[in-house]
Every structure is written in C-alpha cells, then in structure tokens.
Length: 244
Image 1 (spheres, rainbow, N blue to C red):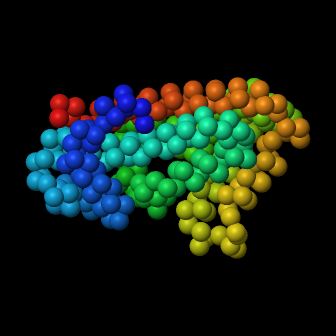
Image 2 (cartoon, one colour):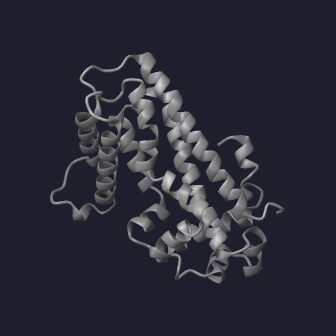
Image 3 (cartoon, rainbow, N blue to C red):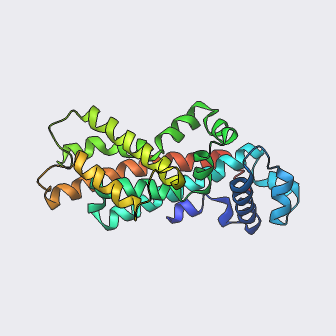
C-alpha cells in the first residue's frame, strides 16, 4: 500500500481504531449490519463506546468505511497482480481473479447472502451507490472490456456490447455459484478453471495477441483500477474523523 494511502487511514495512526475495524468486520460478517450495535463493537474492541465515535461519526459511517477498506484491498490486489504480470488481463485470467478476490471479502459474502441492511447502507447515497456498482466484479471487467477489445484481446466478430453483456452474465453466475457451492448441480475440481475455460472459449480470439498488445492493455486496465481506487479512498476520507 502506498505511503500516501497509509496516511489517510485512521487505523494506521491508532491501534484502537484498528481494533474497532477488526471487531466490526467480525461482528458484521457473523451477524449482519442490523443486529450489530456500536456498543457491541466497542466491547469487542476493548474500548468505550465514545471512542468509536471519535473515529467514525455514526455506525453507518463505520460500516461504510469498513466496506471501502475491503474494496481498497480488492483493488490493490488487482493492481499488484496486473502490474506484476500483464498477461493477467487476458479474459481467461482476469475473470477468475475478479471473482475469487471479491469473494474473499467478508462483507461481500454478506451481500451474497442477501444482507438487505448492508445493501441499503451501501446504496443509500447516490455517490456511494455509483461507487458500489463500479466495484462489482462484473462491472470492473466491463469497464476494461473496451481496452481489451482495442488491443486485440477480444474476438472481433461480435459487438462489444454483446461481449460485455456475456461477461457480466458469466461473472454474476459464477460468482453466485462459487459463493454457495452447494447450489451447484455437480461438484468440480476447480470452479476457477471452469470459469477460465468458459471465458476463453466465449471471448478470446483464435490467435493469441502479441506481447506488446497485452502490455498496453494491462497499462490501460491498471489506469481504470487506479481511478476507481481513488474514489474508494475519497469515500474512506468522508466516513472517518480525520482529526484523530
């Protein structure tokens, strides 16, 4: 994580704030937003209730800030992986990375379990709703589809809009099923490999793109991810008391 980012996260300046976030994450993951109170979070963190309000004005701000931090970790991993290996932007690699990284988030799993209160909180404000929508795995992939198409990483025989729709449907379907594997009709060795094969057959050209094209697509993709990351950091700034 960049130094400038660290300076903007209150938990890097306060062990108490870090404990509050950890406790809130665990309680919300186990019980959902509605059933968790600030008093319970404070007790689990070993601080007074008033201490929570020193760092976050409301419970809603704390949960928003917590979810934004998980989005930040999600985006940081994507940026790191694509920067280290530009071939990760190939659809067969990018799709499983987006789904698996997203599903590691405890709050994302709460959303997958239909936590209506968490969804309401994340989408109550228009700006937050837009950011939440932009950071969905399918939306993240659709945002870079024009870049992949421009550099020859997608087939040219179908409209880009159709390909974006197909990618969305595949990612949502696999994401839902991978978050609840018991819902699948049969068990497979590695769902990520099935996803990779599906996306490759559906979207990738018969002739592999040149290394230079892959690198250019990776650079454009990282730029999109960084732009979204900046918006997530702005949400974190708004949710916490920066004076602490």
